[in-house]
Length: 82
Image 1 (cartoon, rainbow, N blue to C red):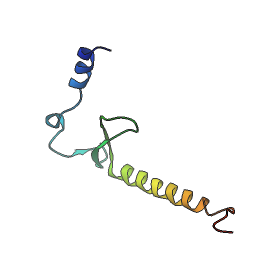
Image 2 (cartoon, rainbow, N blue to C red):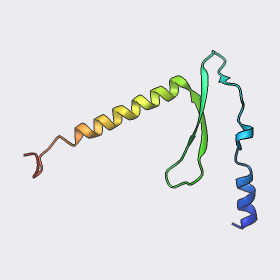
Image 3 (cartoon, one colour):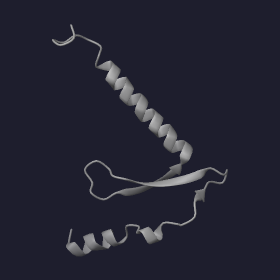
């Protein structure tokens, strides 16, 4: 891919001026929150918009996953905890 093509792709990324100033709401009145998220292995963040309830649900699921993985390591026997 040439440098010109890369420049054109980067020029299409949203700038702060593209982000609306007033809050966004869904049709049923839920507030939409947009966040910049970095994907693994990428240097360019992407913008993801979800409702506050969706962000909270995702955070809770992540915490539950971390707690589950932490507890699953305690099962079994190794040289340190037998």
